[in-house]
Picture (cartoon, rainbow, N blue to C red):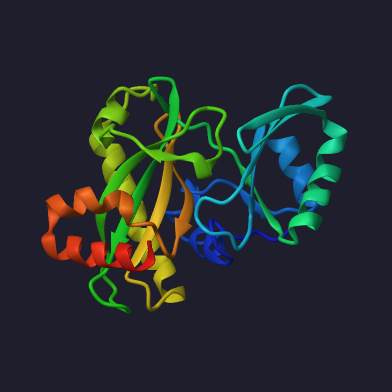
Length: 250
């Protein structure tokens, strides 16, 4: 089996061979019969993501109900289907979409007020090809239990509030924030040679119930609109630069 992407081809391989990042990556494979049966026997829930998609594309979640039945969730709809029909159904979907899918271990995301949340981190470097990266912003994005990742929305929770009020066992807000900052910068440093002209890279993190941080996705062209409020308060030069990009690219 061939391991691929966190979000784009090759990124997962680069990060997987980093001694710091490897323990923070959910297991990910290119979907085929071998990888499906391996992962289905290993994890109670899986996420499928089409490759080459833009941020927020369609996802499928599969959850084992028992030895004969599974739950299939897509586009906010959930159906119960026999386990033996899962892979044939996926084959038909891939044939119809004409795009390979990534198969990823589903991370049980921590919840705040009954809703799972993730943390989106924006990293930046002053000039292309510059080595040093910094974190410009970190925001909480929420999702109702039945929705897919494309339905994630910005929420009014601050990161500190979300972590403090979450169901994470003994949350240490400073440690979790520092860990996400460190991992985002480390990932940007490792991935930047593959994107020498990029000045910004975005990352989605999840924290599980035990307080472990996971890198779920990485974006070579992150959406900046959600970060404008933080950038406005932080640095006017950075804000003007980001606002200009948002006006140009949407």
